[in-house]
Image (cartoon, rainbow, N blue to C red):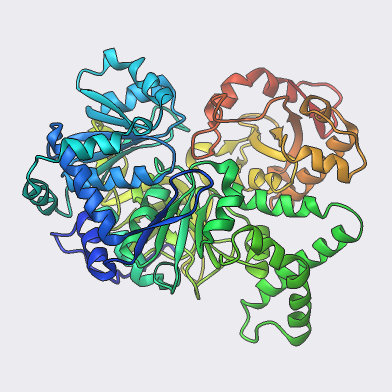
Length: 609
């Protein structure tokens, strides 16, 4: 199959915008909770009704207009995932302006590029540190007029600034916004070069959000539906869910500090979540590590097998048999119920995107406690363009085409997309925009296939294909993803372009290492010690063997180099969305790669600086 299509369930009229989505929710929900927020990190969750939220949005929007923000002007937000981000986001849209998100971890150079390229007029930041980052490059930002700090009562100041402004002015601005008007400029995370400004319209968001509310009611319209956002709202995935939650009937919460996530999940008790695969890997590995030895380890391993058997049985007409149901009940009491409790106790669904989840995790979580709907999308597609849905799940795929989407596979395997959710172009880059489309189809740059069910499987990225000296084309993603499944592995970068075989650079997970060492009878090892320890290297050999099971011998990893650092956002090797900057790694570790292929006696696992 080379073409798959899914009809839209909701057509978006020309007068629709994100503003009308909020207005419709207010009409439906009125004084019922729309958002729950915390005034202090460990304080109680306080309900904000739909009507209260709209009133606050309009008050802040009046403040923006009073400060001179005009229709179509760009206003940037640089903050963690918190209530004020969503409030200011909707206030910007109500004022007829364009929101420009900035990751709160961005460097001064990145901030300068985004604010200058977008011609930002006003920036709202969270903290004094963020403000200082902006001030350090302000001399090169001629259109920037002011910097407002959330921690210094920016919201209150905006409300005060708009007190004397007629409410009708903002109402006219809000009502004038149309489907095809620009809503936001989201800058790609820059894993392959300088970030590009992706221009997304109100219609792009409205199409996805309104169709999701109707097409996936199990998440967005179920009784007591609620979700806790913890991924950065600067990312399109979280931004889509922000809008889709309001398009449905769910309650939205925010968790600004990932270190407090377990406690926040326990107190907020979401029914659905969105996350990247690394989050689910951490949950699984932590649970496995807690049961790391003796009887507990055997119980966890047995329960994990039961979970997978249960999940696979759900894919056959007869379903789980009596013996499996009995095993599942026991495993639930011993393991699954505890795991679910760590995620709040009410979690039924999760949506995973950003990278491949892997069949192991997909089957485990569905069989254990929560069904993960793996999906696929890009900033240019306003997030989801394919997603598994309740009742239409093929684990290992990223699902069928989203409602109103066409997916085609080009002759060279590239995934092509078409639909109302596709962006209108790259800011200030008409040539790049033209190159991104072919015959009306958006060229994703990803490689994939469509199975007999019309489900999409992503197999790699065109720019990352490795061509060995023997002419073998190798997609590194499957090897890297399978190796990362090991608890002590953090990141993997496969190498081998124009080399005699495939190798890999591997980093260790410093958080998981202590528990693994304890479970394996080793003293506490630092990363520097672990990378040369025979038992660790032997364990990494097993991870390599597991990865190689998925590919042919010519595509298999023959040798790895274990680095003495991890790839992080702080050291510049990860994007804020946790993607490895492959090109930077290959440049900075060129000598390490050369050493991997040096003609010396080799073992399969070797430590390297």
